[in-house]
Length: 301
Image 1 (cartoon, helix red, strand yellow):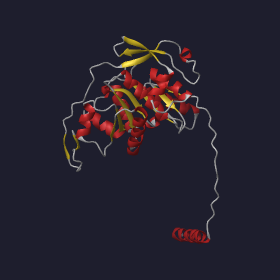
Image 2 (image 1 turned 135 degrees about the horizontal axis):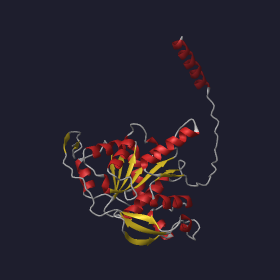
Image 3 (image 1 turned 90 degrees about the vertical axis):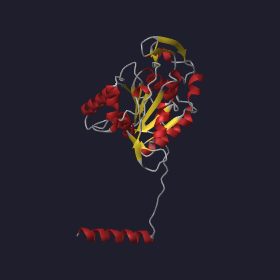
C-alpha cells in the first residue's frame, strides 16, 4: 500500500499497516419492552430499560437509562424529538430524515458516544462525501462527546495517522467515503473495528458513488445484521422522483442497501421571521448593467 509519508513532503512510500480487529465481541442494546413503555415520566425524555447483548447472542447486563444519562452523553441537551430518534437508532439500523438545521449531527453524536461507552475497544465511524465536512463534523463530534476524533481525507492520510488509528489511539474516525474505500481496498483498515457507522447525506448512496462502495463492503463483511455495528444514515431529502411510485421504489432500495428502516422524527415547526432589505442600484451600477447587456447582445449577434 502507498500513502503519504510522515514529513508531508508529498512523496509516496510503502506502508505496512496491520488492521486492528478487536477480540471483544460487540455489545448491542436490545429492547426489553414495547416502545410505548419507553416514555419516561420526565415528559421531554424518552428512555427505558435496555439490555445490552453481545454479538454471540448472550446478555451481558441490563442497563437503565435515565434523564441524567442522556444529558451527560453530549454537551448539548437533546430535544424531545432527538431523544425519541436516539432510542430508535440505538435499537436498530435506521435512516433518519430530518430538515436541515434540526440536529442530525447531534443525533449521530449521541449514538456514537453511547455505543462507544458500551464498546470501549471499538470505534465510531462517520463517513462524509466532501473534504471540508471531515473537519467540520469532526470538530463538532469532538466538542459534543469529548471523544478522541481522527480526521482523515486524501489530503492528510499519513502512515503515522493510520498506525495510531490501528493502535486504538482514537475513539472516532471521520473520513471521506473515497478515502475510506481506498483504505479498505489496501487492507489498511478493518470494518469490524467499528461499533457504529454513520453515513452523512446518505441519499447520495446510488450508482457508482463511493457511499455505495462503502455499503457494499459492509455487506460483504456480513455486517448488515442485527449483531453487526449500528448503522445510521442521515439526510434531509432521502429521494428525488417525479412520481409517488418511483419515490417509493427508490426509498425501498435505499433502505435495503443500508439494511435499515426509515424514521421521520416529529420535528416541531419553528416559524422563521424573514426580513427583506430593498437594495437599489446607483447610477454607476445602472450604466454598467446597460453596457454589459449591450456587449453580450453584440457578442450573440
